[in-house]
Length: 235
Picture 1 (tube, one colour):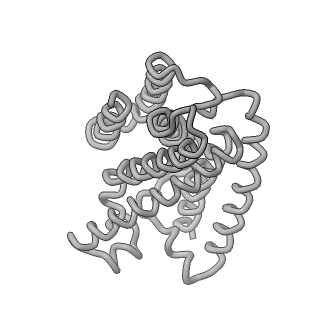
Picture 2: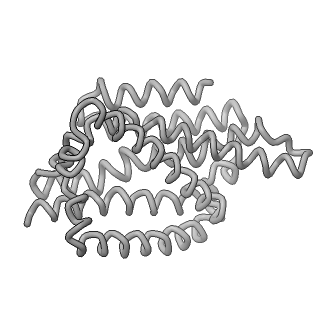
């Protein structure tokens, strides 16, 4: 409950209350708090949280391979006129300096660090402890899957506030999904889409044994998407 409560408060504070300059330090602080809660009160280990240095090289390798595939898909989407406009986002009508700050600081330290520690590290590890007693081999696998599914659903709900105005910022969504109904469709799509993405990132974390893999993929997905959106606005 402490973990979920911390995440709810953090989400509201970051999206509705705090000034933009506080986004990075706030989320870094919340990530540290979640790790302390997991270690101090649930006695979780670095391996269980995906933070073991022993698995770091494997995580980096997996993350690099999957990130390479994402780069290829993005560049293909950018080259096709029909999908190029999906990259256009009015929130990225900014100068080069602010864009680099967003892509290289805000995304990895303000967004990815907290989300990966929370939804691929702390939360699923805590849920596994509750869903899968160590003495039951079969239920351990089922419990791990249930833990990842619940964490992915929470990850989807985490994106309700961030996606609230997406249909107004993106011209494609604004034209196709304007008004209150459009917002409902956009938010629902964001929740479902990020929940599915969360499952994929959880698989990657489990397969590699390290949070480094989903961190690299998440940084590539968000950061590169931001850069490409900015480039589209320059033409």
